[in-house]
Image 1: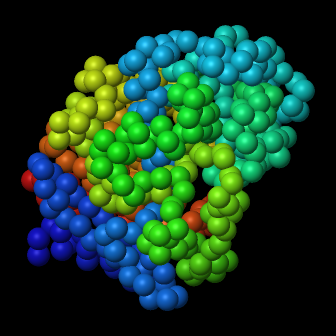
Image 2: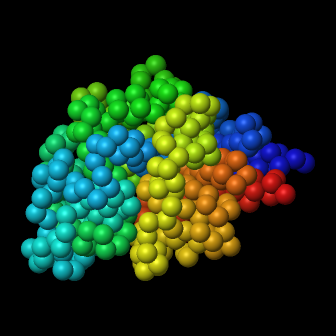
Image 3: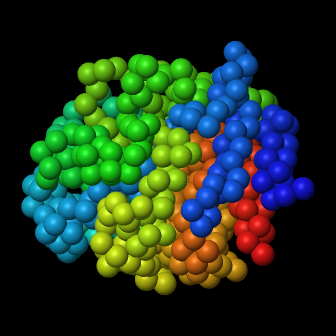
Length: 408
């Protein structure tokens, strides 16, 4: 059995067991797709199979794309990494910082310095996701900003409401995963004086031929969307109307202006492959240059101190386990033996960043390869703590191990 068959069999067994409704896998190496599989169903109830062009919500796999767009503006001199974001968002000119992450919102100290663009790109701004914390700050985020992906708060109002909340930590202090990339995307839109979706389409999607990547799926493509699946209280697959944490509405209205540059994109295997290849070609794909080599090198170099790597977490869980650093929008493998496979594995220098709905990818320039895994695995945080919905991590780990074994 060749490596591709092994991947399909291993991941397919997890889908067949009921631990996942679907999974799409792709291995690209040296200019060729050497493995691809579409396993399970895009609509389980209607028995509509997953297909190569099925559209997935890619969640935080959106972040590297938005970060790339921002770095394109950096190349053009529109801002410096050390520039305060208040230049473009004066709402953030006088920030306050909580004395305790779980303390009262009025117990704060002044920010010691402004938030910079590099802070946003590295999640060291002091911003967070409310759902990752307890106490008053968690409730305040939800009340102020609405859904993390589908929010009825208009972009300018969203920026103002976020700026009115205290920071979780001093700017630059450490990595707190959260709304930094959403804010970065809205600042890109301000700088370009155009909606973020239009900016991404003009600067990245059209040049790379990513015809199926967008914040809003056109009506004529909606039959290709993968239905969202989670689990009921007993751990059985169950169709859902909305994504975890109330981050989406059942059907996004046409007049919703807010888009999430951190979590909001839909995409396909082939589209994301086109994007991921910029990390193999020093910022270019088939002659189309997105970033200059030196900018890509900045993006894919660890920006965190050892202490920041050690303290980085999501929902109380360590994020990097010692094997990764974080650049600007992507994790970077520093020690392959310690690199957690569900962040991204590969050799030293490989990059990637997963999505909370089951998506995952890595680009490894050392062997000119891209691995992509897409799924809809919509699990609430309390379910994960009870061991529900963990099948996706087993599937990703098996996929990466078998795809990497094919190197040898």
